Image (cartoon, rainbow, N blue to C red; front, side, top):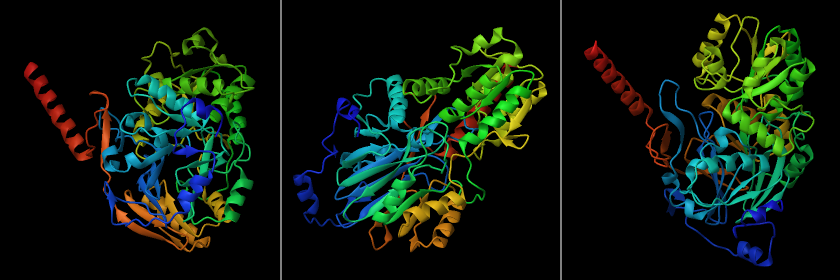
Length: 520
């Protein structure tokens, strides 16, 4: 870990040293009956590593993974998911900490692999229910610090900073981080070593030799991990059903620049707020075509500030301080980077299409919008509703490609990447995560074709016992979900029941219609 870690509060459960006393404690045989439970969870013994996908399987989002060894636990990521768009007033959905009630006192750390919402979205909502140290890279730590600062009154949060490639000990786990590439800076995978088993947790990843921001994946370290032996690989499945050659973030600059040069009016680019490399690419493309850049969207503005602070945007031209500063420029000199790539009603792209934000320039015929993001399944109607409003005003909408040049690339491994990873790591067993049932099934078939001995496909709450000899189901634990509402007491999270929320919303609408009828 970096020297910053001590200044942020070192926990006795986390150390960078392997002292003689800790070695003696680990070597001492201790037998624990797996039938004992901690809030429904088996108690980890010293003969295996327990692994549980609390969230993040059978769906995209809400990634939480527990690992247990010798009576203690670590949690890798704690993300959130969004409610269906037709249900109003729900900010986020995530596992109820009460489902982990007797695990939490034995939780030594929460390790963050990267700063995407589906991996960190619940963290600031969990405190003070969970008080273990948060272990994160500088970028993820800065994102989380900003969120904790907004929510004040949650008590002191212990945060420990590491750099990709660092190695440290947490409880009975020796943790080796490995630098990966993804659509957010400082993404890491984790090698979790114990005397009982070694697990490789990929996090979200792809292979990108030129990621624009940061360094490429540390292939040498991956090969070294494989040579040292991996019992099970817990791996991202998002594109396990997707053929095609690997793509690079650097592939986008030519297409972005061409759109900027060919468009007579303003160009707006919608992307995910944490995609710093995409931000850098758009700013460079705008500068090459004589355009000034502004950004719109609270989360995007924060991301740009954090990236500048950490030196991730060195050599990238500065942007305008405010989006309304674009209004004094010629249309051919205007470029806007905005949030709202998923059609969110209150995000910048939607408000640009409606024209109800005085800070934003008005849309005019001859303008262009680049949609530089994948449409998450379920969001299609909202996204294309925004596109329709833009096109009705004479705006050209570019989706994914321009004159055969890409305007978006995936941040996840396609099948070719997955095959390379299996060749590097050579795990005995595979545990596909992060995907729909179709993704997990495709990943399982690929893993078997790559020669693993067996594949364990999890469901949420399935606790697996991992040893060098195999992966077996230990117990199925019920994981309750809760929701944070737009209106309500802070820190009070009702149970998430989609049918009940939908029924309540429909009942409220009927009452409102009845009241309007009486007035009429």
